[in-house]
Length: 103
Figure 1 (cartoon, rainbow, N blue to C red):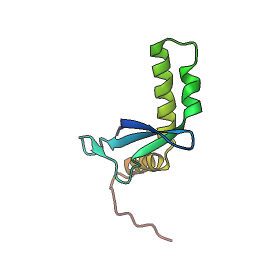
Figure 2 (cartoon, one colour):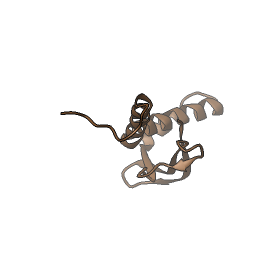
Figure 3 (cartoon, helix red, strand yellow):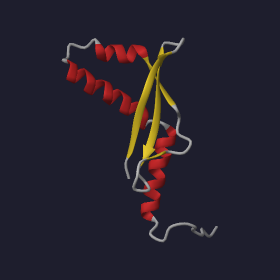
């Protein structure tokens, strides 16, 4: 299963963050669909992004660094971590749900 994020817009916040409007999707059903309960935005410190932009790199390298920063923030979202864990659990359970656990 794969996940992707579509960035829809950016807005500065009064706390020095850049708010990226986004839609997080998975292809669990074979087509891309919004991940239920996914956040509609991700905030990243403007200073962190400016540090990347100010590096002595060419435009393509700066874009790659910005994307890497964005990916690391997105991959750290608790919801995405949980969704990936569920995918891996589902893979380990060949009979699927429900499962009875004797206590």
